[in-house]
Length: 255
Image (cartoon, rainbow, N blue to C red; front, side):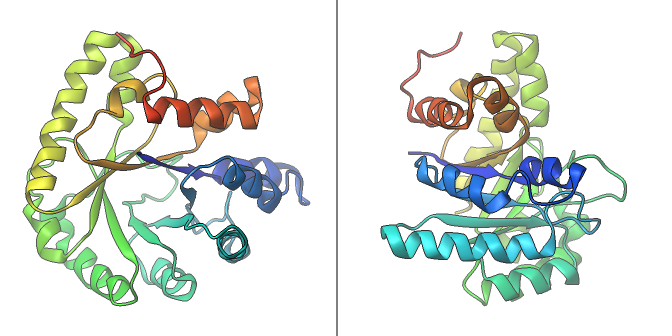
């Protein structure tokens, strides 16, 4: 089954907007882990507008404790820009996976993938240092990327496909979404031919996942904003149940 990694940034954003510790990030993350998801994702940005440095450690400790108590292998995914700051965090915490994403100062959210030929000199040494500690490495790319061979050369384990454009097209209608989805399939098949595994994330939800779940070789989706938004409507446990059912293929196919 495709793994669901829940990005808890939005919970931290709500907490930070008021100060204090409500909603409690660890408490809500434990509820998420108990739902049967594959793990948690955090993106500790430099401005700490959502995830703070201490949160990264607190959630790491939560997952370790949860895994020990329940004999589970819940994963921890730390996202961040290719920098010494993120490298220090990853090497200290040793998560299951580190996902490197391009970050621009002042951006609201990630909105593009790496250009691997141009970014190779920055990415390659970080990838090697992270992999040397036994941490799986993924890099954020777009569906029309033409230089995936550089990902293989630098030794990444996975790509995470930026699915924002797909979600936008899907919102127009199924036919538009399906046309966009075919471009993602081509990229996924190319990556698989190079021995690279597939993750996906950005603006995925319980509706467009009915199509994206069919992506060749898809291992994991990382979802935060739309999942938490839906949870406000139906409650967190019901929301997580819906997403897990969708990923398992139990829902009626869209179209």
